[in-house]
Length: 455
Image 1 (cartoon, rainbow, N blue to C red):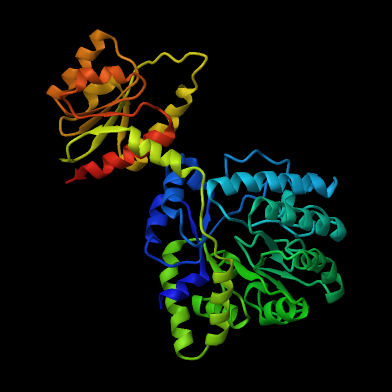
Image 2 (cartoon, rainbow, N blue to C red):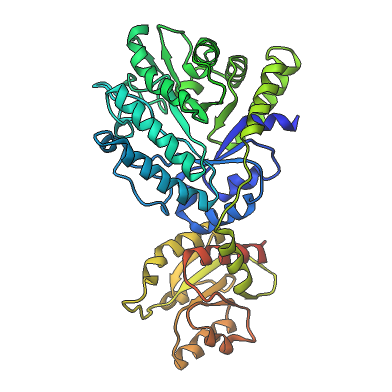
């Protein structure tokens, strides 16, 4: 049942994980920080997601968790909590507009957890403070800021993670606070609900005064408290199910059965390869009646109501690269690849290209599986290797040396800064990039990896 995949929000850390989801009908994609380490991967993902009706989110809260390098930094929630709410609203509006332009339509923020003496550092600076009134005001400001920018918001971690001494990524925490004490934790979430927060994320924490199960799979917490008592009808998400607080004690069967019976909507999977077992488990429990089909259908309807077409202002950049870069390279087999960097290049004060070399080196190793060397190390390259010769500048004498490489190796000449140099390699396999940015070079390496067949 492909429609059941809509009930899952899958995190991705690289293009390979995104490709795994390519033919799936998942309801949401969560972009993890590693996606942004290589801008070429991020741009390609956005280009391929453009036009799809899907929730595309990050954890970019500002401060302690800043995922997207293209968004101006925030001083963090704990500092904002000492100021007027307008500062939070202004930041969330500004950051939200950046995210919206990138194609992101949802953000897993604001954090509405209170700060206590015992609060684990996993919350730390992410909290707006200890006063529930202040946290509620800041949360309301954040919700309005994101809404003004055109983003869905997500209040977390219901009913409050602040009293937990443990990090849910590593351990299951039990909070022994009384119902009266929990009222202060709940207050910011009540205000968020009154301000029509689009979604709420549940914590993997046990609140003994309410239930012996973690909030994320507790019917008492989700259906009775959040849905019925607080009247919340927006999207309800789990935190990532692979977090040890949940996965060490509860099986996929336990999680799926309890979560959907409790009226939860979407399970977050930090590893997309787990989609198969969780979606098949859901299909099985529906077939045998352990989970109500009416509950699931209601969640699918709710997700469909929130699903939004991904629209980005950066896809034209990706298209520009595809159209402008010149590939004159024949398909061929190769055993291994050596990417050869120049021994030197002149970088003026109007040029930051030298800072790209470490990133390009990482890209070459990751995408092409290449050995990366300098030109003066060419004697270490085996004759069976394919040489990708990255050229920035060449004197006439150096042109002769680089052409001679093709007498010994299969060579692909990659001309970057001076396209006129291509005239010296017109009879050879060559690429003209017109750029040395990692955004372009990552896509060039990706294309070369498709041209060069291993074996």
